[in-house]
Length: 339
Image (tube, rainbow, N blue to C red):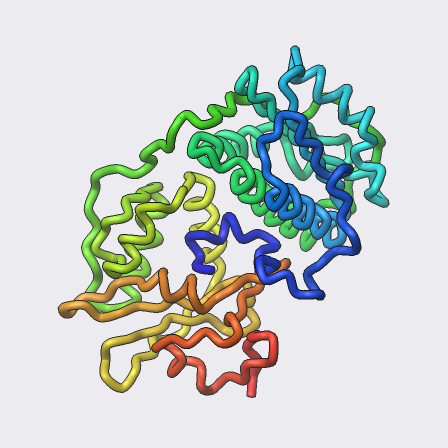
């Protein structure tokens, strides 16, 4: 899955549902209560699976509740947080409850005491408005929930690596921390991009830098020259949010790119990162009329992300960029290793 879709790939390579990615018997009825029937059976299973993984990996008990009878959604969320025992499945009482009210067109992410330091109100409001709502407007509720979960995982991952989760006072329940915003369910997708044009670079590195610059400016125009024609066609159907673009920039800020690698014809190039930088997936580029364009569709075909956002190759996927990895050993799961 290519990096621009990374924000809906969370624990994400469990799209393949390998045994290593599957939590022990996720309880749909406990993790997702869909009283408003916004999700179909497959979507219920998907959300429950990913939230089960969130509990396994980060000890966060994350529930979803849809209801058309919330009244004051803020008070309702606090009450239901307690009624559902949100956080009880976590050994450290880390609980989150997402409440979606389609009747009032409101959404609230309720944060338990134990997570208030990791998920302050400003972060929650950002996630709701910049990640969740754009998917909801496009009628893709399940994808919006999963895309939001990806940002929660990234936040928890960073906090865990910095001991941020374990250094907080652990209390039970919720005191009303969180944020509420308009859900705008089915309102139609916003154009978050501008009409600014971005020309392709004369080198792969130049094009990649122009791409990062476009993401910093939240330019989601699918017709930029920095993309291959196939990529442009595919991107016209993608929901891309400000939070996704921010996440791309933040994810690669600490990556150390190696020198460009070219195939023997000079048509294809790869920019990759050291194997130790497992969350920085490589970039595929094609030379088109003397300029380099990002081949995100081939990246989507060939690259997947695991539950900790470490990238690996999709097993059996053939692509013209294999030349750039001949000095690496690829294991049976598609993960690169030093030879």
